[in-house]
Length: 276
Image (cartoon, rainbow, N blue to C red; front, side, top):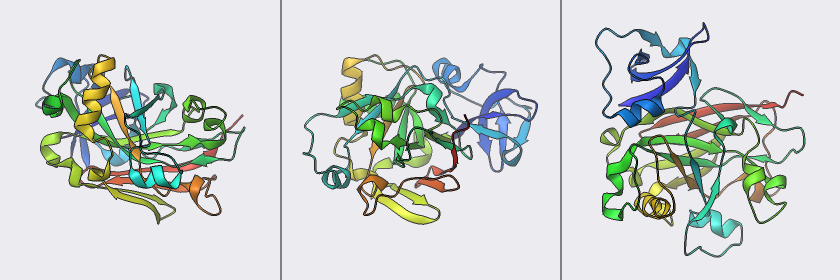
């Protein structure tokens, strides 16, 4: 099942189940997708309205998560390109919900810096409230997976040892196009993560190259916080980011970034300059 959030031409927002080139509107079941996940199993109601995907605006699948937990330094290629030691525990930082944009919506390069970089990642969406989840039980709390572009303003990320400023500029977190439930994907660790800029491949790895895999991340994160339905864990990026290229490759207005995860789909965002 593919689950998405969207906006109609009249401005109304809803969520639904993707069926071919349409989305079945499930807005009568719950006010948003986060609430629907909390309520339990999802099934599209009989006779619900259908909308062509081409006629709706894609929103971040979970627009109002309680938490977005980001994992840094989680692919060996990215660790090595930055000259860092392999961490013994997950590197954690956070992103705020209002920095996210949906599929086909523009990423915003801020006026204060030209060092906007791409980070293609796979996102894990939590499906039930949980705490102290053991590794063996981790898959039971997952609602699904999505694509994420953890757009990073490197200049601001490097002001101090804390990543937060560079990871939270408005319009820098691409999320989507939808959430794919685990039953459709099978073993996600065999999926490939690919990032392209203007059609040229910049990043590529398989999910099994993660230093801390998905069960390990859920076990670790649920030890220090209560995970809620709709929480998002962004699992890290692989090597090939723009900051470590020679010369550096910064995103500029007019660029198009695609993040693809096998079995999930392609998240596509153009880049625009901040309008101030």
